[in-house]
Image (cartoon, rainbow, N blue to C red):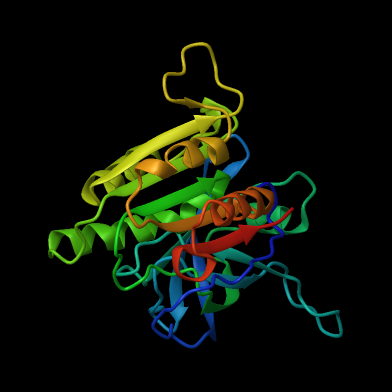
Length: 263
């Protein structure tokens, strides 16, 4: 995504009921720049001591200090990059926007600061089972929502619950923008998935995909078997890709799940 201020569109599908969202407090325990303009932040749960959430969900975070008599504190929503079985520490991968209110707050508060959040929110969840291939299309920091989903697929595969083919297409601008490659590669391997990265501004020595993920995914459609699509990231990408998939016979309700980040 290209901004910290984001909106989300609910997915259409059939899911088990997620935990009810509730307010909680977490402490900033780590912050690291992991690529140009991209930061990873870790918050340890404090009140309560753990958050039960499902892979793909997000939290809403207060991004300013409260002041008596002030306007309501602005909030931003961030996908949880933590694995869903590790709810004692919440990780977020965010794009840092120069002069952005949320960016300034998150990058300036000191370690040990307590931040108020609510959650978990969202219905961008893995189906309980899949009739065919599982296909992820992610752009930018949208991959953060996919990382715990890959972990969940890996656990299912190890228990014999998930045996279908899994494909992940991740779109970024240039190679320097890529982050968390070792972790993502481990998750991909555990899930038995196939990863292809597409760059819109690749260098001369880039050997993976070039261009946008939309045409690349559509080109592979004919080889897919009863696919379920999980599309996350840039809102314009999702709108276009969803439209093209539907025009090619993909069922909007049963085969497409979306989580859109808007500028």
